[in-house]
Image 1 (cartoon, helix red, strand yellow):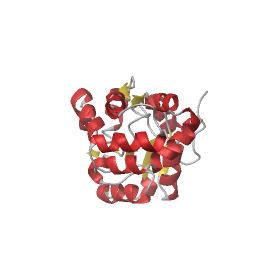
Image 2: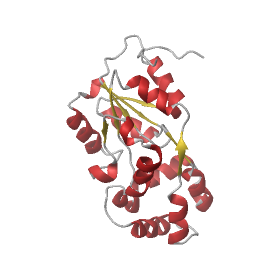
Image 3: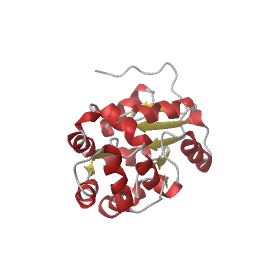
Image 4: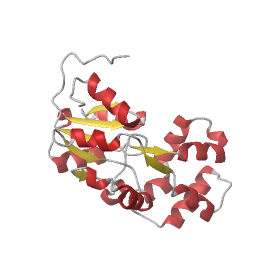
Length: 211
């Protein structure tokens, strides 16, 4: 199905990418729901995860891996110990989706590209070492380095200020509806997308060049 194009294509100067779920295939959701079936749904898991004190501390660059693991296990009532949790958590980002290189290479000459992702030192080290992912963007704003998290407004505002772009000329893509809604409240052109093909669908719907 051909996506419906916007009546007037917005002028976009910068494209901000969430990483997990948009450019990186994740497996952690399924594992967390196996460990904590009382959560019931992906939506409830994300709601609790985004507001978890242990997650927020670790993904804003505070606390050790062990403290993070102990906190998540306690908060979610997980039936695993620290070492077992961390051994699996390290590999929740499984692989880059097919088509990531082509997508970013096609956009880089025409837009300022930046990553804006809730992440941590453990995963970011893998992103850099295994996939050289940070080098594919003009700018990177990983939450653990910035000290701010989605869906908090201050995180988005920090990135807009650093890039010196107005919200209405900024496209943000994320696979999480909570983060998309938070960005949209600030006037950012925010859309939900899963995988590179999802991003291309978003671009086409906005009347932007996705070649």
